[in-house]
Image 1 (cartoon, helix red, strand yellow):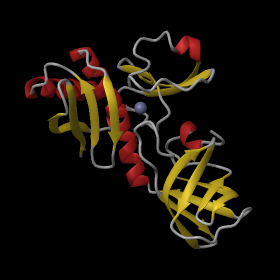
Image 2 (cartoon, protein in one colour):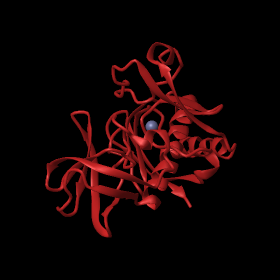
Image 3 (cartoon, rainbow, N blue to C red):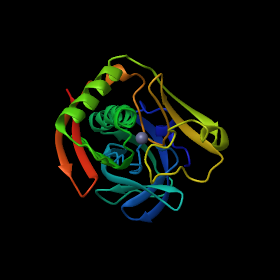
Image 4 (cartoon, rainbow, N blue to C red):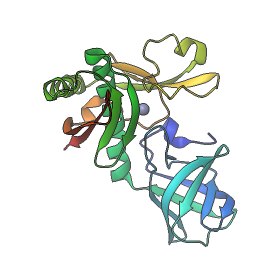
Length: 236
Ligand SMILES: [Zn+2]
């Protein structure tokens, strides 16, 4: 992705940028990108773009044909405009905490039950996991959540780095989501929660698990013979 600052520094809350292209009057690309474009189970960032005090709401950000497109609440920006971008940081930070928490939970789930996550969706107020598992009772899920919270409490550092694809694919469990094989690129972005989990991942994460808080089970659902779904949230 071109100048994807969110991949390098997930704590960047604002940046200066230039409007590069108008896809439509309310869809633009920028020279620098701090807004996370929805993908990999992590929803879009929102926020605002400012030009000389004039505010344009950023309602949705997505990737298309190798570009990061910002959908705006109103038209008026032009190619070449210098703007200031600002994230809705409260929302993004919560998604970062949820995302790192979700990696820990999926690692513990795999270890404790052997279940492989088949789908996941983060949201600002909850996270959903789909997986296949025969034994699906409350006691087992409570135990998985409890163990995940135990891992979170270790205050582990989260490291982000690149590895050649071949080398990365040798790491056990590098791809947790059954359907989400990393793209056919030579270098993979790795998210390592030290001592807990290592995954190929394009999302935004916290620097240390102490920032996450605690995971709490909201609900358990049967979606078919062995298809299970849980929803959980962050506390606080
Ligand atoms: Zn992830």
